[in-house]
Image (cartoon, rainbow, N blue to C red):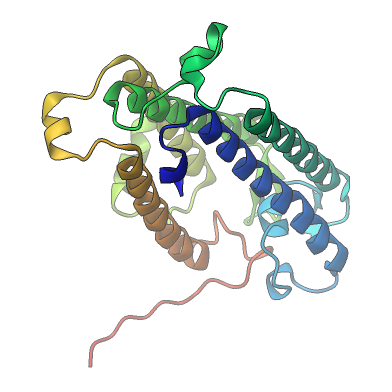
Length: 266
């Protein structure tokens, strides 16, 4: 795990680049596999697909009625992922074989990327950059919805989505976001999330961890990894319920019919 490269910041970067390349490679190659076995005459939700439904709900390759008849945008996405995987793999090999194992021995601006697992300042900068990039991803999704549009189940076609001018309208979804039924509310929520992530990222880059937080939390690379895995587990659980029950975000045209959850005690 990360403990093997905890004190080798250069090797740590190489491992992360290789990991990102594997993810990109899987996404591109598996999309090709799904596209090769896709049958437009059958409901998409009955074909055991993972990636095509997600691309379709973003409007890629979809025409009226939610049918994929124009695969060119999907093929472009595949090409982007496969080329990115190759670039990341090359970067990983370069960092592994040619770059310094420890960035503290590097020359020039590369020294800025050195870090120590038990240094709160270093970990804060790393966390901050992760949050900023997540914020940029949320902004990109908002811009896609505003300029290109996303799939609307109510119309069975693409439409442009504009976020609310008053973002406070999404306040009521704090405890009931799983039942959201308006794409405008979905996009407005991403605007709020993008703002929070970006501001939080800048904060963590500039402000060191408070003393009480250092006493309350374990500050180390392994602890950050454990917190992250816990957060991913929570998001996976929430997403599984959301995917199974919300047809606004996960249209029935691309996924199976909504799961009717019933709870009872006997």
